[in-house]
Length: 184
Image 1: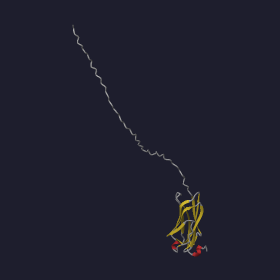
Image 2: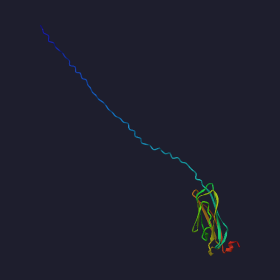
Image 3: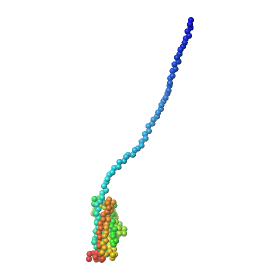
Image 4: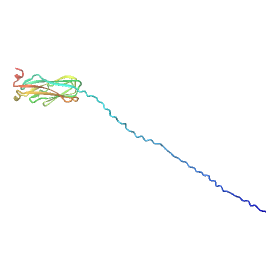
């Protein structure tokens, strides 16, 4: 009888199990950087009016005639209105033929007076509003060549908040003798 031989058939089965272990570690630390932006300046124009004083100045003499070696009292009248004059200065430069008599000048309250040669100066940090006067005595030099001439004396005022200057003048006629200066 036939004999049977057992046959075994085997189909190999491959089994593959993949084991992958993969760990992703991602570390993120946020960093802030601040760059300041300067503000944009918008220019703003503002106008503050500077007050301007109204100034008038005049000068008078005690006599409009004077003899050689005679004396005349000069008065400087200053009127300031609207506002005070800042750093005010009144200067009177005596003309040739007139000389200041030392110690005779009056000054504004709070002001100073100086005399350098023939230049008389009154100065004050602030003048006005006011109607002010300053006086002084000047002598006509004893110079024969002055007889018959007119000596014109001018005072000039300036201050920081005034455009330009203001001035006042007076003239005196020189006579030949002291009696002529007295009107005799």
